[in-house]
Amino acid sequence: RNYVNVANRNVNASLENLQLARSREKGGDIRVSDVKRWESELSMNRMELNDAQARHRAAMYRLNQLLGQPVETDINVPDSLGAEDIVSLDGALLDRLFSNPYDTERYAGFVIERLYENSPELRMLGSAEDIAQRRMDMYRAQRYVPEIALIAGADQAFIREGTISNPQLPVPPPPDDITWNVGVRLSFPLFNGGRTRKEIDKARVQVGKVQMEQEELRTTLLSAVMSNVQFLSASYREMQLAEDACGAAEHNYNMVMDAYANGMADVSRVIDAQKVLNSTRTMVLNARAQFVLDYLKTERLQGSYTFLEGEEQRNLYQNLLITHLK
Image 1 (cartoon, rainbow, N blue to C red):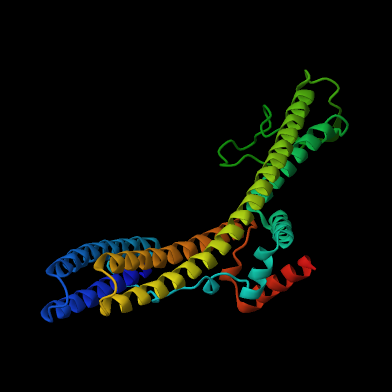
Image 2 (cartoon, rainbow, N blue to C red):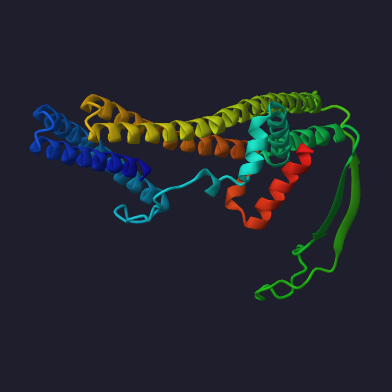
């Protein structure tokens, strides 16, 4: 949507310049080549606008698909979206985090602490280690814990030769004797072919494997956090630099336009200034989007998305960060 707005502003600027060129041509103050040059620029700018509109619609279709609603549903997208609408940290804190390398490292340490608490990957490996450890303890206990069994039985003689007085009865009479027994069996696994030892060894290997995977995952996540925080710091500074560049380009464009209107600048300077302005506006959008993406990657690494939580939780998160920095 933002790309559509930038492309539309560029088309409007070319339209205004074309009208100015035609007015000057009627007054005999400009050559006809300027008009044709602006007509050509306007056509190319409209092509860019068409491409931006197509990408906007395609993105909306994909979003509708993800939301599980009709693909052609119109989504009300705001005209502009600032990083502060998603990032849980206020501007003053962001300036502090990314203007001082020491505070940037401290912020990375804070994210790492949150990672160790919330990472779903580490939790999964921790559960796997518990299972393997319990399995090993179970087989170890089989060496010393006896197997206890309770045995009971009863025998009844339902038919004895010559004792049925009325064979026509559907059910024989109850027997006159019952034999029963009750016992307890206690057994120790003195020898089972080494099966228990093999299972213990297998469980021990599994525990060691999971522990190695945990250590490797911690190292990988640690490296990812440290690297991503550096990228986040760079994208934050680039976002500010892009905004400064856009402001300077806009000031330059206005100056060149004044000179062009007074006959002090040719059409090439105006077109160059307009292209630079359009490029820097696009650069601002890219820088903002990259900063938000880097921030979301950092949130993912720490195992929680604070921007999805309520204001109270977001304030708590920010206060914890400030305390950590102190």
